[in-house]
Image (cartoon, rainbow, N blue to C red; front, side, top):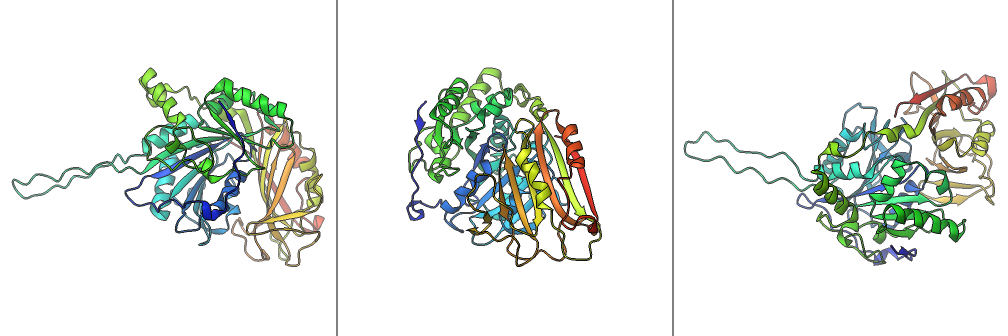
Length: 474
């Protein structure tokens, strides 16, 4: 297995847009896996500027999270609508702006897409296909998902199992022939993102880590720039032990060319150079498809033949944190960032794997340690600023914390005064956070969250707040 160097950036004009999909063209599906905090979402966001605008590109994304808060879809500014399942709180759909290559985002929450949420995959795909007619779908899994199980489910759903027969009352007229099954999707490839810097923290996570490395067409090494080549070699050696024929590429600080990520099935697992891959139509030539076929031939495949007892869900604990003010009649409340920052700075990486939150701040958050200037990242622009307060009042931010590093992303451009769409019983939501912890840490960190004063509103006792910390069943 050769490690492929990073592919150079290409001007967008050199990238050939995919043909628009139609009812007769199956939709390619890419699965993006990787442990918590590996950089899957960053890689996905860095792909978007490389894609032609609509109508050439109509990308749909399914994101799976253990927690109960739809956070990542908020990075794509748009209007939340009801997706499959009606008022089902375990899924949300976001429709993006007309200029974005992303047509819609479906989040599957409170579980893992390869086990307890696997039944929601079919309606989610069907909703996206019928609503947005996507040219491609990307599924970003939770950190503990088994890609083989998900790949099998996509293969199962690729062809419609429903047929129609026309019945006539006219004598001696035969019924119309049943319609051929519709080819709706095909699995274009499975990609695994590995955080090289923090790889030692999760390479020993047992069965899940090995299955992710085995059932993948391409490994993307992320966060390798600040470690030595010896660490990179260790990660590559580990990948070779699990799957010796797996291709490996390095990202450029979370950036990988779209020509590397898309079109895997058409390359048959090879040809990872710049410009390779035109996208197949589900011929089963990728490495993952070959592995699945080998298992099917060896074990007279049935779904139950895979040793998938969902024990991977117990590899992590998950807490949901919600801070809200009660009956606030003044300005919208904001989180006391000075009390919150110690959590980000001191949370041990072997106990706290991931923190994701939507929070309200009255001032631009300070930069992480070692950052030269405060940087505020917007969903539409990126600017550096040293301003300590907002001219427009309280603003919404997204926090993304993993292994001691974090970013704040500005969610909107205006004042958030007025009704909050996430209010409950008149509350103003100040923070909603999902914390993914090491196994067995939930009770300990529930006490810490409740007792150490990390979560408070600006204004102290003048603002009545309610803090709710709950364990999420995975």
